[in-house]
Each structure stands twice: as structure tokens, then as C-alpha cells.
Length: 193
Ligand code: HEM
Image (cartoon, rainbow, N blue to C red; front, side, top):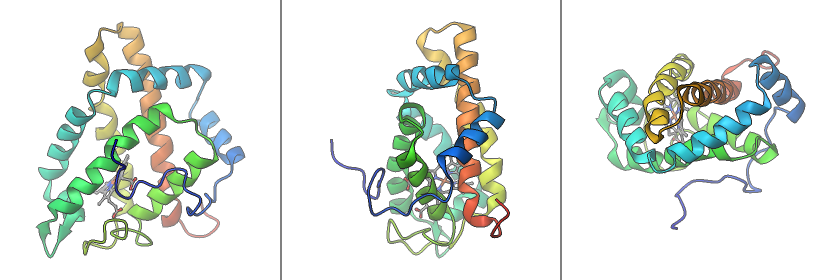
């Protein structure tokens, strides 16, 4: 498999996450996380792994159909197709990582890296593009809903029971909420996170 450009999961060059494993445990507790969520996320990974392109087509259709969102992928007001497709590759990997990777220090460090890539610290740097400097936090939070609600039909495509689909869906919802809130870190004033 060819490596994904700019995908730096587990690399020692990454900045350490400012969030500790203990903080992560408390966040998971707050999200009513249980061992079942670990199991159902794994199952979701199995169900989604050969549907990643279809999921991305849907999400990219949604972003592309909303000029106020597509804006974050533009250079001089025009959609930057190179940027869109470079990010798409990493987005696909993220779907699998969210379901399959252990939420350990490497996972936390890469969440921090992705946070910086949405914020002005590192946006555009990975792909060397000249696009707008920051993704506004309000959309980062708002995205939790579309990224969650649109996954359900894909989770239901492999013949699992309604209960299993519902459980995978809830675990996915928790996992997306967890990542989006971790990515809010750079936006928050010192001491406020
Ligand atoms: C990058 C997911 C919110 C625009 C990424 C990546 C992922 C991702 C997985 C690639 C990370 C990597 O480099 O490995 C998400 C999720 C969101 C969210 C789960 C919220 C729940 C948004 C919003 C926008 C956006 C609201 C604005 C339309 C972008 C852009 C990049 C990016 C422009 C490339 C950043 C760079 O220059 O490196 N996102 N995203 N994202 N996302 Fe998001």
C-alpha cells in the first residue's frame, strides 16, 4: 500500500498531546463510555472498511454543496482540488483509525496534530497549500451532527440486527464527539480547556 501523504500517526516528530491519558479517561467517563463501545467501534470498523469511499463521496458532496464550508478548501476563492483530494485520503484513514486504533498516547498525539491542522498553527502546512488560515470552531462542533447521522445507513448495510446497528451508531457518536472536543484544544484560551 502506498503511504498516505501527510499522514503522521505514531511518528515521534509529533508534538505530545497536552491532554493526559487520565484526562482522556475522565472524558470517556463523561461520555458514558463502556467496554461495549470499544467492541462496537471495532465492529463498525469491520462494517465500514470497504465502504470508506462511499462515505467520503457523501461527506464531500455535503461540503462541496455548501459554499460556506467549501470555503475552507479554497485558494483565491476557488476550490483547491489538490488540497481536497490530499485531505480526502487522510480522512478515509481517520474513519478506520477512529474504529480500530487503541485510544493510547499515540492516538492522543495524533488528535493533537489534527487539532493543529484545523487551527491556524498548522492549517495548509501539510499539503503546502495557500488556503484560508483557520477552520472556525463553530463549524468543527456543528460537524458532529452530520458526521454522525450520515453514518447510520452505512452501518446498516451488512445485515446486522437493529440493536447492533444502534449500538455501533452510539459508539460512533461518542467517538466523533470525543475527537471533535479534543480538536477544540488550540482554540481555547490557556487554562480554559
Ligand atoms: C482535515 C475530520 C471538521 C475542513 C481533516 C482531517 C480529518 C478531518 C480526519 C485530516 C486529518 C489529517 O491530516 O490526518 C474532521 C472531523 C470534523 C472536521 C471529524 C468534525 C467533527 C471540519 C470542518 C471543516 C473541515 C467544519 C470546514 C469545512 C478540513 C480541512 C482540512 C481538514 C480544510 C485540512 C487541514 C490541513 O490543512 O491540514 N478533517 N474535520 N473540517 N478538515 Fe476537517
